[in-house]
Length: 203
Image 1 (cartoon, rainbow, N blue to C red):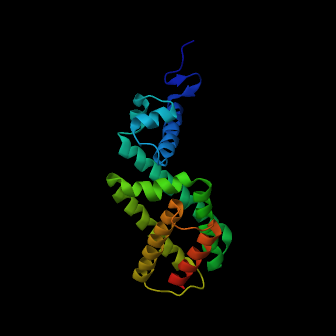
Image 2 (tube, rainbow, N blue to C red):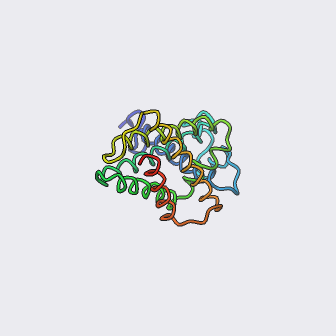
Image 3 (cartoon, rainbow, N blue to C red):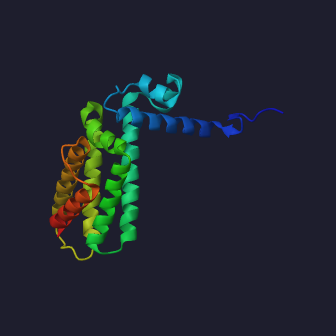
């Protein structure tokens, strides 16, 4: 019996490609977030147990792989924080704290993600623009969230956007210092301070 085209050992080609890409994404995160390793395509392929041929199957080059990992982390942060806010109810303080708890827990449980997205990405010239775009996206989402909260003052869209930029910019600096060890704080300390900061900016 002929083997169906594109199927190997019962696994369609699309699934094999997706599985290899996933391995490369995990490997890129592991190498990139390790300050003792140089982030190269060779190192990533060795970590993934794949040849360079398969790297180029998923990415055009190293910068594209790094950008994909940064977008993956940002997407996870957005999905989990939005879900936490939805489950927290309508109280502004409860929604804010729930969102921040999920965000900080994600970085605490896997510091590689915070290090890659907040620290290492800033050091790669090709990624600085994308990092700026993501920070501004989250600033805009913060403004939207504040406008949707009952009990907070209604300000102009411009004022909300300014507050969002202040909040997200401050959070980025705080998280960077925390992950670098420049700030000694527990996750609860960070959540407490960030909750006060958000409600202070929008309250």
